[in-house]
Image (cartoon, rainbow, N blue to C red; front, top):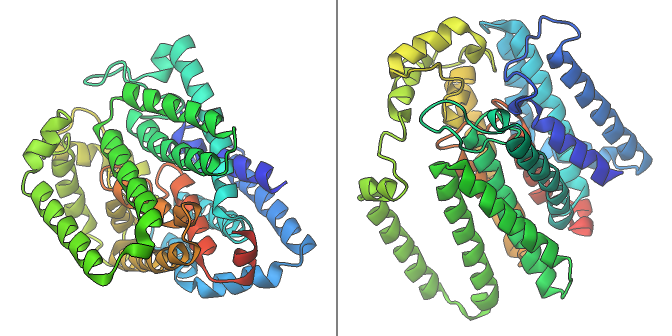
Length: 412
């Protein structure tokens, strides 16, 4: 039952980012897509509540939430922002979506270990890839980008190629981890993960997203470092870690000082395909309400705002998101919201590192992998509960998975 609910939650968390539902459904329509989505989240939350009650885990669940009060405070701020929001109904809808997704994600973070969550991602990816390939083959104008300069780039079931690429990069690394774990245990199921690993590489290639390619390289580098460390960590001493840190700092400085060359490898430049002018205009607007923002999720729903930022960024079409997750939070909830969110990420960082060091397995690094993915994916795209709550869902699940509790120790 847990696996079925988890896969359904993954699908629902991606719903607004697909071509089947408008990115910003109108919450003023009582039985429209917005409130149908909330009704489905309520249904899943009730199923989660039933499981908690049946397994006598309500106390454990509430205790974990008390340990993650920063996250609860961020969600509360999203609700309270309806008081000053430029679109109160939208803020209520988006806040409810955020709340229910967080409640469900916290449950799975508490109940399931990394390998079982990765199994859920395996089946989600299978459904996503089959549907995406079917759309590209049977209805190319729907499954591909049909406007310049990326005509023909795959977007699958998603609204944009960058969204398909970013999610595919994550699923690709999940398939790789599962394959390595299966081969370690001499489990033949690893060959199936290997097949979907190669299939996800092909999908990512046809998405033609430089952001997706860079993300793929970063995630593979992370898993490679973890895999090597697990094999030699017992031989490493403090001086070795200092050497590694020094090399990492030197490498980062080398990359940052040669950004033109690095972006050129992906046929891009340091304007990041027009994102820098977009970010400059958005920052100017964000500082009109610097402390508390414009209300959670409301700003991008306004035609007038999209037209204004289109002119400021000098784009030929209206932007629909900030193409930077942290900047969207700044627009919605101001400096207060950004500080709270950074506090949540800092807490996740500390706990996921401790969890990984305690487990000392590839699966034990899953919460940290989610954090690394979310951090880099959101530099050039908005995946912090903007057009979906999928990545937010994974972040909350990772946070609760890494939060110390007797239940986590039993299921990891």
